[in-house]
Length: 212
Image (cartoon, rainbow, N blue to C red):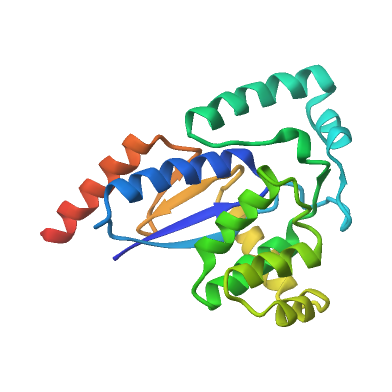
């Protein structure tokens, strides 16, 4: 197997697009050698714990509604090309994603990490759910075979907060400034939402190397 580490944030639209394009390659190459692990990166580490109104957030980040609309029009085009349906109108708040990253970490321990990541993207971008809400996170966990009551107890505690912060810092110290960032075989960093064709080429190259 070849390790594929993915550094991402579940409210990052480019991460959602990048995952969709990678997923297409994995489906087309079912004998791919990748062993995938997801790693935390908070786009907004200073976000209040309760999150904030999404329109206010976007206008502050991009310098006004017109620039925000321009940026998200481009994102919407890429999402559509990737076969994704995003309902922007349903997203009312931009959450703090620390707890979502804690859930992804616990899902990794239980062997359902990618399924939980997929569910978080869907909940946020298609269903407009607040993935900073512990009840929403517990519901997502339950639907993927995790124990919702345990997840709620963990979320109510400080469990693994320092772990997530340390891993986020490690990514930044390594030079990661944006997500998604893919690290192939612990050596080659591939930043950004890459096209399916590139991933199929990488998979082919990896398969040839493994035969040597």
